[in-house]
Image (cartoon, rainbow, N blue to C red; front, side, top):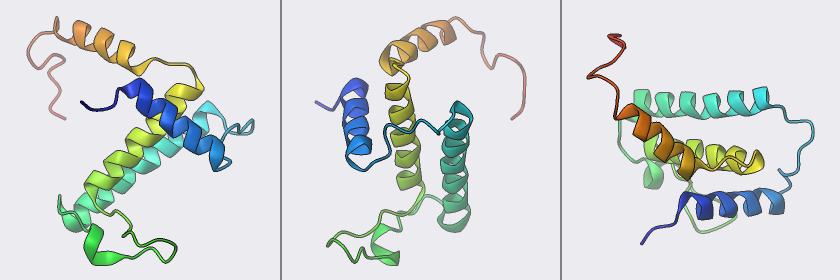
Length: 118
């Protein structure tokens, strides 16, 4: 059985406390949105460069540990999730509840609602 989003959020938050990223009284909600956006942009750049190929073992090695630096769309998606979990925990947002609530609402929507192409 995998970790719950709440467990993952707590793990990310503890890591950020340990590494000095929390608390950060100077970080604004706008900063958080921009940082989430930057991770999405990095995922797009990884896709443009490598498509969905995992480049972890081919590019970099970490001089501090015997682990390669994760590279590729999957790694960037993980970065998005890590930041999202961090900020949700910081602002006491229950992502599991919000996910369920949003999916319950989305199930009521019409097929391809909105009619937009992109």
